[in-house]
Structure formats: structure tokens, C-alpha cells
Image 1 (tube, one colour):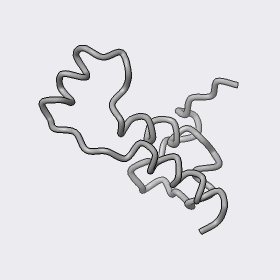
Image 2 (cartoon, helix red, strand yellow):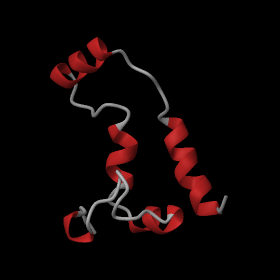
Image 3 (cartoon, one colour):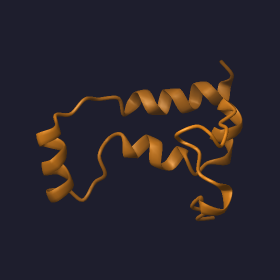
Image 4 (cartoon, rainbow, N blue to C red):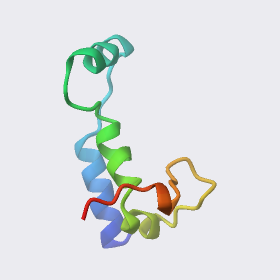
Length: 73
């Protein structure tokens, strides 16, 4: 794996976890923080380097059209 791929995988592994559906439902209703799976998939789907590191294509689940990606800076 390339250094960029290892970076993204390392970040994702830091958030690896399992939650029960009941806990997830409670978290969504009572916690201001996003669920664990959204802390990885949400940001990565908006980073161009992620697309190039893993050669993400428009037919893949994490693909978001460039015009729809969040750009803060």
C-alpha cells in the first residue's frame, strides 16, 4: 500500500467499532457527535486525495460527484 493509502486506513482503524442498533438510535437522538461510521466515510468522501489514493470510480458507493463535495477551504 502507498503511504497515502496507509494514512487513510490508519485513520479509519482508529474509529473502528461496533454498536448495537439500540445504542445507535439513542446516540442519534441524544448526542451532538456523529456516529462512528460517519466520522470516516463522511469526511473521506469529500477529499480528492482519497479518490486518487484508492482510484474511486463513479460506480462505487463512496463516490460523490465533484460538484456535490463539501469544500471548506
